Length: 452
Ligand code: S3P
Image (cartoon, rainbow, N blue to C red; front, side, top):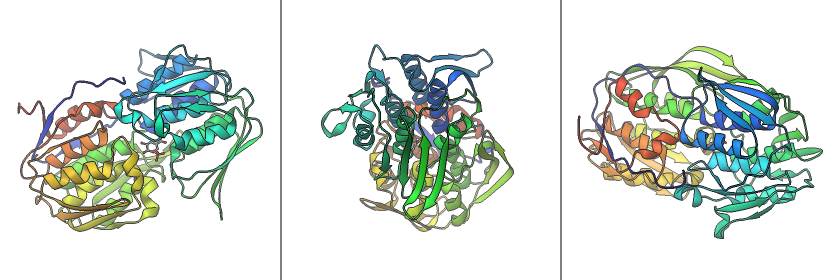
């Protein structure tokens, strides 16, 4: 879906208490990986709870284009008949990954060490995002990559028929870079080594282990060192995808800032490499309780209850926490606007190369809503106005970015005047049921700026 969907202008109105159960969809990161590793295993992998957002559907389509058989069963589970490591066939058309940075980057890694070529593209947001961070390490394996200026999409990768294993220190804290290197290393002989200074989400390592891959991970003076033995036969798995903590962040945050709210989000993934937002919210004084902690499918999960928290305080979020909450800064900046005092987010320059420049997008919309925000290349500071203190009344640009859209819709539930967005269509990439779910909890969200 590289074309522009028709824009959907939306408005979110100051809301009464949000109450009930928020069953958010499956984890986006885990869903992409389940489809790709399912396609690289020999035989039938079953996936329940797969996120059926557009990003993941585009990855499912891509796996079919590379020769896997991907089907949805009548009971809602997905099946992937994999072709084995090194078994990808050459797609006969361009691979369109829509809005999905994770999809395109992980798939490029997975195909680059096979003797096939593929051309990748995406929507205007994806075509503007940096890809050298992926093509640089893939070239070390022997792949040849030709993109537009700045290494951007559309981009062709000519996979290598003689891959060599690689030892690579990632220059950016990115699970996408790490995963692309590990997926490429699957079809190289010997050991591929990836070193990252800060731990990023580790779903790829956990899932590879589950599929029978030989992979170790160790913290050393050099950083986190991950060692993968190449050319395994991956065994098909039954995967249950936990609910996405990055999607849970929206009803949780909305409950904290809307008076009288009490919302339960069952069964959310609480992998420590993803849980930085919840640590930060607790530091701010949020009323959060984690119930029924357990492990499912190699991932820690719990039921999370969030209650209105009138006395939230601003905090300083340290740079070393950034990787574990990288997708949650937009919604954190909304909570920060409703807290007392200032919240400073340090070491967040990666936000500038997400689906949009998220520092600019949030700062602009918050300022238009009456909130003071300071930014520099790597920092954002939000000057909180206290519970119920944010004026609102703005129309915010979402720049093809689902998380910017959902963040401003949550803001509008707690401001004095409604908040509008010029386009809510991108929400479908990761959280297609957002509007229905939030409405069921008690929010008022309308389309085309017309109430009712
Ligand atoms: C993701 C990694 C993060 C995150 C993205 C999902 C993943 O990106 O922002 O939404 O599934 O690996 P980076 O690896 O670029 O930080």
